[in-house]
Amino acid sequence: MMRIRSGAVLKAVCAAQPKLLKGIAGRRLHSTYDVAIVGAGIVGLASARELILRHPSLTFVLLEKEKELAVHQSGHNSGVVHSGIYYTPGSLKARLCVRGATLAYEYCEKKGIPYKRCGKLIVAVEQEEIPRLKALYERGLKNNVRDLSVVDAKGIREREPYCRGIMALDSPYTGIVDWRMVALRYGTDFEEAGGAVLTEFEVRDISTVKESPAGSPEGMKYPIAIRDKKGDEVRCRYVLTCGGLYSDRLSQISGCSPEPRIVPFRGDYLVLKPEKHYLVKGNIYPVPDPRFPFLGVHFTPRMDGGVWLGPNAVLAFKREGYRLYDFNAQDFADALSFRGLQKLIIKNLSYGMGEMYRGVFLGAQIKILQKYIPELSLNDVLRGPTGVRAQALDRDGNLVDDFVFDGGVGDLGSRVLHVRNAPSPAATSSLAIAEMIADEVESRFTL
Image (tube, rainbow, N blue to C red; front, side):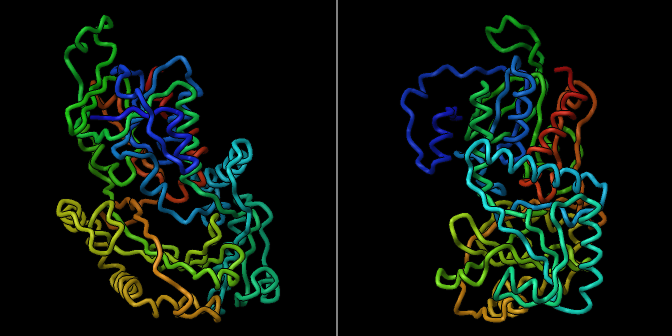
């Protein structure tokens, strides 16, 4: 049976003190809504919040398959507030990140959510990295990244006494926050504005119906039926899906395109032992290498005072596989049978094998990290948490690095909008992404 969550419960979750709410089961659950949003990760929550604030007279429901909200990518990330350095000038990702960071800081201030603007150094440790670092600086300037500067070896040591490098970009506007706490606050805003949140509702079918709900006097005002695996049903006029790791499957069950395909990549972090936290003050990142598909390992302080190192990036054998041996036959078969993944593996075989090796043998991972903090040793770290990234791939093996919306035609397709890809840094950009998604919803649907 699906569960209806109250604002009081969400606030309790935000405070990390969940409570049971008496009398919930006795409430009558409305089954018809103007708009249903599927997926309560940070993008779905931000979008639901934005839509209901724009259209307070409409009814909205947010559907989530888990017992709690924001438990996957939104709750398994490094917690960085990015400033927008890396992205192509003028691109949607660049504009959304720069605006999103500003909105995120303003939102945290308004809601009393703790954050730290601890800064970030992007450090060159080899001479061959200097041209790429300078190009990155020019890119950041074109993206209007705040307070960005280039520092030399002395400047690096002034900011990070234990870090060594030749040259670095200093981004003091970069920060850290608990993104799950932010996401849950979005959910509270949504409920306080009158939205309904249903958990344990795992969507298995989205289709049109030919008759109105039993006892409904409104005829076919709500022609879309969303059903879960237990047989519960919600009727609505329009559907927005923000499915993250399952965005491709949600698209397929509504008759839309199966591509781009989602392939899960697991990232394993190490954590510094508490007595070694002094080694890292802010974020320390490598200069990205365009030959490889992912950013590389980095040092990230956390809001709880901890420090994470990593992550690596290896193929996960389950879409929500946070442990090394987690396995799902359907997820594994879907991934390996996809020609896009096969091409990606062939193009990056050496890189991929190296990532797997470093994930098993920590000494190899430490060797890379020691390029930045030579004092670091294997005895200073422990295995830490893990995240799974929903990486969108096209059939040619290219990482889909832009936003992808998908809908269709006909009675069903014209009423459904799928957010197929909301690439990193989606958490930083979440409020700006929500504005864009709401604009897209308004342009496609008659709200």
